[in-house]
View 1 (cartoon, helix red, strand yellow):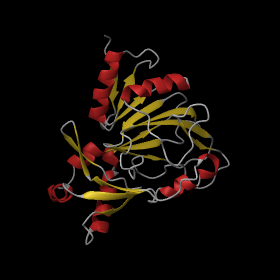
View 2 (view 1 turned 60 degrees about the horizontal axis):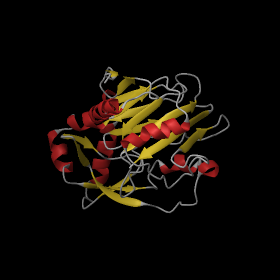
View 3 (view 1 turned 30 degrees about the horizontal axis):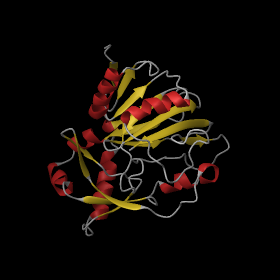
View 4 (view 1 turned 90 degrees about the horizontal axis):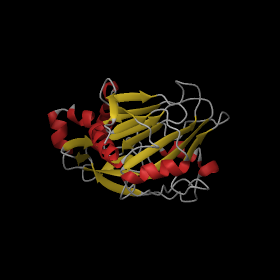
Length: 265
Protein backbone atom coordinates (compact mmCIF):
# COMPACT_ATOMS: atom_id res chain seq x y z
CA UNK A 1 0.00 0.00 0.00
CA UNK A 2 1.36 3.43 -0.96
CA UNK A 3 1.40 5.92 1.89
CA UNK A 4 -0.59 9.14 1.68
CA UNK A 5 1.56 12.24 1.28
CA UNK A 6 0.31 15.08 3.47
CA UNK A 7 1.34 18.43 4.94
CA UNK A 8 -0.39 20.23 7.84
CA UNK A 9 -1.05 23.95 7.55
CA UNK A 10 1.52 26.08 9.32
CA UNK A 11 -0.81 26.67 12.29
CA UNK A 12 -2.00 23.02 12.41
CA UNK A 13 -5.62 24.04 11.75
CA UNK A 14 -5.96 21.61 8.82
CA UNK A 15 -3.99 19.40 6.48
CA UNK A 16 -3.29 19.16 2.74
CA UNK A 17 -3.50 15.68 1.22
CA UNK A 18 -1.54 14.97 -1.97
CA UNK A 19 -3.15 12.11 -3.85
CA UNK A 20 -5.30 11.48 -6.92
CA UNK A 21 -8.75 10.68 -5.54
CA UNK A 22 -9.64 8.81 -8.73
CA UNK A 23 -7.06 6.19 -7.78
CA UNK A 24 -7.26 6.17 -3.98
CA UNK A 25 -7.02 2.71 -2.39
CA UNK A 26 -8.91 1.29 0.61
CA UNK A 27 -5.82 1.35 2.78
CA UNK A 28 -5.32 5.01 1.94
CA UNK A 29 -8.93 5.75 2.93
CA UNK A 30 -8.11 4.42 6.40
CA UNK A 31 -5.14 6.78 6.58
CA UNK A 32 -7.23 9.71 5.35
CA UNK A 33 -9.81 9.03 8.09
CA UNK A 34 -7.08 9.10 10.74
CA UNK A 35 -5.80 12.43 9.41
CA UNK A 36 -9.36 13.79 9.42
CA UNK A 37 -9.80 12.78 13.08
CA UNK A 38 -6.50 14.44 13.91
CA UNK A 39 -6.76 17.73 11.98
CA UNK A 40 -10.51 18.27 11.50
CA UNK A 41 -10.30 19.49 7.90
CA UNK A 42 -8.48 18.09 4.85
CA UNK A 43 -7.75 19.82 1.54
CA UNK A 44 -7.40 17.92 -1.73
CA UNK A 45 -6.00 20.21 -4.45
CA UNK A 46 -6.14 19.77 -8.23
CA UNK A 47 -8.78 17.05 -8.36
CA UNK A 48 -10.92 16.39 -11.43
CA UNK A 49 -13.76 14.23 -10.13
CA UNK A 50 -16.99 13.75 -12.02
CA UNK A 51 -20.14 13.76 -9.84
CA UNK A 52 -20.29 9.96 -9.78
CA UNK A 53 -16.64 9.76 -8.64
CA UNK A 54 -17.18 12.47 -6.04
CA UNK A 55 -20.18 10.62 -4.59
CA UNK A 56 -18.27 7.34 -4.64
CA UNK A 57 -15.35 8.84 -2.71
CA UNK A 58 -17.65 10.42 -0.11
CA UNK A 59 -19.44 7.08 0.43
CA UNK A 60 -16.30 5.76 2.15
CA UNK A 61 -17.13 8.00 5.11
CA UNK A 62 -20.76 7.09 5.75
CA UNK A 63 -24.30 7.57 4.47
CA UNK A 64 -25.28 10.74 2.57
CA UNK A 65 -27.42 13.08 4.67
CA UNK A 66 -30.38 15.09 3.44
CA UNK A 67 -30.25 18.87 3.81
CA UNK A 68 -33.75 20.09 4.65
CA UNK A 69 -33.37 23.64 3.35
CA UNK A 70 -32.16 23.15 -0.24
CA UNK A 71 -33.16 21.02 -3.19
CA UNK A 72 -30.60 18.43 -4.30
CA UNK A 73 -28.91 18.46 -7.70
CA UNK A 74 -31.44 17.51 -10.37
CA UNK A 75 -29.37 14.51 -11.50
CA UNK A 76 -27.53 13.56 -8.29
CA UNK A 77 -29.69 13.46 -5.16
CA UNK A 78 -26.69 13.31 -2.78
CA UNK A 79 -25.24 16.59 -4.07
CA UNK A 80 -26.50 20.04 -3.09
CA UNK A 81 -25.58 23.05 -5.23
CA UNK A 82 -24.21 26.11 -3.41
CA UNK A 83 -24.16 28.88 -6.00
CA UNK A 84 -23.57 32.62 -6.09
CA UNK A 85 -23.94 34.71 -9.23
CA UNK A 86 -22.25 37.96 -10.13
CA UNK A 87 -25.62 39.67 -9.98
CA UNK A 88 -26.46 38.43 -6.46
CA UNK A 89 -26.63 40.94 -3.64
CA UNK A 90 -26.40 40.42 0.11
CA UNK A 91 -24.27 37.93 1.98
CA UNK A 92 -22.89 34.71 0.55
CA UNK A 93 -24.55 31.43 1.57
CA UNK A 94 -22.99 30.36 4.87
CA UNK A 95 -21.24 33.69 5.51
CA UNK A 96 -20.60 33.57 9.24
CA UNK A 97 -19.01 30.91 11.50
CA UNK A 98 -21.12 27.79 11.89
CA UNK A 99 -21.19 24.02 11.78
CA UNK A 100 -23.56 22.42 9.28
CA UNK A 101 -27.13 21.65 10.38
CA UNK A 102 -26.41 21.67 14.12
CA UNK A 103 -30.15 22.25 14.65
CA UNK A 104 -30.90 18.66 13.58
CA UNK A 105 -31.25 15.88 16.14
CA UNK A 106 -28.54 13.96 14.27
CA UNK A 107 -26.36 16.56 12.52
CA UNK A 108 -24.11 15.37 9.69
CA UNK A 109 -20.71 14.23 10.89
CA UNK A 110 -18.79 15.29 7.79
CA UNK A 111 -19.12 17.76 4.94
CA UNK A 112 -17.51 17.61 1.50
CA UNK A 113 -17.29 20.71 -0.69
CA UNK A 114 -16.11 20.61 -4.31
CA UNK A 115 -15.26 23.69 -6.37
CA UNK A 116 -17.02 23.58 -9.75
CA UNK A 117 -16.66 27.24 -10.77
CA UNK A 118 -14.74 29.80 -8.74
CA UNK A 119 -13.87 33.50 -9.04
CA UNK A 120 -10.27 34.65 -9.29
CA UNK A 121 -7.88 33.34 -6.64
CA UNK A 122 -8.23 35.06 -3.29
CA UNK A 123 -11.95 35.68 -3.72
CA UNK A 124 -14.56 33.43 -2.15
CA UNK A 125 -12.20 31.82 0.35
CA UNK A 126 -13.63 29.58 3.08
CA UNK A 127 -12.50 30.13 6.66
CA UNK A 128 -11.99 27.10 8.89
CA UNK A 129 -11.74 27.30 12.70
CA UNK A 130 -10.24 24.35 14.57
CA UNK A 131 -12.29 23.57 17.68
CA UNK A 132 -9.79 21.09 19.12
CA UNK A 133 -7.34 23.98 19.43
CA UNK A 134 -10.08 26.33 20.64
CA UNK A 135 -11.05 23.96 23.44
CA UNK A 136 -7.45 23.38 24.53
CA UNK A 137 -6.95 27.15 24.85
CA UNK A 138 -10.03 27.74 27.02
CA UNK A 139 -9.47 28.98 30.59
CA UNK A 140 -9.82 26.15 33.11
CA UNK A 141 -12.93 27.66 34.72
CA UNK A 142 -14.73 27.87 31.36
CA UNK A 143 -13.85 24.25 30.58
CA UNK A 144 -15.41 23.23 33.89
CA UNK A 145 -18.45 25.43 33.34
CA UNK A 146 -19.35 24.02 29.89
CA UNK A 147 -18.41 20.38 30.53
CA UNK A 148 -21.97 19.17 31.08
CA UNK A 149 -23.95 21.94 29.42
CA UNK A 150 -26.18 21.55 26.38
CA UNK A 151 -26.70 24.23 23.76
CA UNK A 152 -29.99 24.93 21.99
CA UNK A 153 -29.54 25.15 18.22
CA UNK A 154 -32.07 26.60 15.77
CA UNK A 155 -32.46 26.62 12.00
CA UNK A 156 -33.53 30.25 12.44
CA UNK A 157 -30.26 31.29 14.08
CA UNK A 158 -28.14 34.23 12.93
CA UNK A 159 -26.86 32.50 9.80
CA UNK A 160 -30.36 31.70 8.50
CA UNK A 161 -30.52 35.00 6.60
CA UNK A 162 -27.68 33.95 4.27
CA UNK A 163 -29.66 30.84 3.36
CA UNK A 164 -32.93 32.72 2.82
CA UNK A 165 -31.26 34.95 0.25
CA UNK A 166 -30.64 31.85 -1.92
CA UNK A 167 -33.93 30.03 -1.32
CA UNK A 168 -35.54 31.41 -4.48
CA UNK A 169 -33.10 29.50 -6.69
CA UNK A 170 -32.50 26.28 -4.80
CA UNK A 171 -34.68 26.36 -1.70
CA UNK A 172 -37.41 24.03 -0.49
CA UNK A 173 -40.74 24.94 1.05
CA UNK A 174 -39.60 23.50 4.39
CA UNK A 175 -38.95 26.76 6.22
CA UNK A 176 -40.41 25.86 9.66
CA UNK A 177 -38.01 26.25 12.54
CA UNK A 178 -36.07 23.14 13.56
CA UNK A 179 -34.50 22.98 17.04
CA UNK A 180 -32.27 20.51 18.81
CA UNK A 181 -30.00 20.27 21.86
CA UNK A 182 -26.39 19.07 21.89
CA UNK A 183 -23.52 18.90 24.36
CA UNK A 184 -21.25 21.93 24.11
CA UNK A 185 -18.24 19.65 24.63
CA UNK A 186 -17.76 16.69 22.28
CA UNK A 187 -15.20 13.89 22.57
CA UNK A 188 -13.49 12.60 19.41
CA UNK A 189 -10.92 9.83 19.82
CA UNK A 190 -9.97 11.07 23.27
CA UNK A 191 -9.77 14.77 22.35
CA UNK A 192 -12.31 17.35 23.45
CA UNK A 193 -13.76 19.94 21.12
CA UNK A 194 -16.18 22.87 21.44
CA UNK A 195 -19.48 22.18 19.69
CA UNK A 196 -21.21 25.56 19.67
CA UNK A 197 -22.21 26.83 16.23
CA UNK A 198 -22.35 30.65 16.47
CA UNK A 199 -24.67 30.72 13.48
CA UNK A 200 -27.25 28.43 15.10
CA UNK A 201 -26.94 28.52 18.90
CA UNK A 202 -29.80 30.41 20.54
CA UNK A 203 -29.54 29.33 24.17
CA UNK A 204 -28.14 26.99 26.81
CA UNK A 205 -30.32 24.47 28.63
CA UNK A 206 -30.96 25.34 32.32
CA UNK A 207 -28.46 28.18 32.24
CA UNK A 208 -30.63 31.25 31.82
CA UNK A 209 -28.82 33.72 34.07
CA UNK A 210 -25.54 33.96 32.13
CA UNK A 211 -26.26 32.20 28.86
CA UNK A 212 -25.92 35.26 26.60
CA UNK A 213 -22.62 36.21 28.22
CA UNK A 214 -21.27 32.65 27.87
CA UNK A 215 -22.44 32.28 24.26
CA UNK A 216 -20.82 35.59 23.33
CA UNK A 217 -17.57 34.57 25.01
CA UNK A 218 -17.45 31.21 23.24
CA UNK A 219 -18.43 32.69 19.87
CA UNK A 220 -15.56 35.19 20.07
CA UNK A 221 -13.05 32.67 21.41
CA UNK A 222 -13.83 29.99 18.80
CA UNK A 223 -12.83 32.15 15.84
CA UNK A 224 -9.56 33.62 17.09
CA UNK A 225 -6.95 34.00 14.36
CA UNK A 226 -4.67 31.35 15.85
CA UNK A 227 -7.39 28.71 15.31
CA UNK A 228 -8.19 29.89 11.76
CA UNK A 229 -7.13 28.91 8.24
CA UNK A 230 -8.33 30.67 5.07
CA UNK A 231 -8.58 28.23 2.17
CA UNK A 232 -8.29 29.65 -1.34
CA UNK A 233 -10.24 27.61 -3.90
CA UNK A 234 -9.33 26.60 -7.42
CA UNK A 235 -11.58 24.65 -9.76
CA UNK A 236 -11.60 20.96 -8.84
CA UNK A 237 -10.43 21.41 -5.24
CA UNK A 238 -12.21 19.43 -2.52
CA UNK A 239 -12.37 20.13 1.20
CA UNK A 240 -13.54 17.54 3.73
CA UNK A 241 -14.20 18.44 7.34
CA UNK A 242 -15.65 17.14 10.59
CA UNK A 243 -18.65 19.12 11.78
CA UNK A 244 -17.90 18.16 15.38
CA UNK A 245 -14.41 19.64 15.47
CA UNK A 246 -14.49 22.43 12.88
CA UNK A 247 -16.40 25.65 12.31
CA UNK A 248 -16.37 27.17 8.84
CA UNK A 249 -17.58 30.32 7.11
CA UNK A 250 -17.94 31.62 3.59
CA UNK A 251 -16.36 35.02 2.94
CA UNK A 252 -17.79 38.05 1.17
CA UNK A 253 -17.06 38.34 -2.56
CA UNK A 254 -18.58 39.40 -5.86
CA UNK A 255 -18.48 37.00 -8.77
CA UNK A 256 -19.74 33.66 -10.03
CA UNK A 257 -19.13 30.60 -7.90
CA UNK A 258 -20.66 27.14 -7.92
CA UNK A 259 -19.87 24.47 -5.33
CA UNK A 260 -21.13 20.90 -4.91
CA UNK A 261 -21.79 19.91 -1.29
CA UNK A 262 -22.26 16.45 0.18
CA UNK A 263 -22.94 15.90 3.87
CA UNK A 264 -22.41 12.53 5.56
CA UNK A 265 -24.37 11.11 8.49
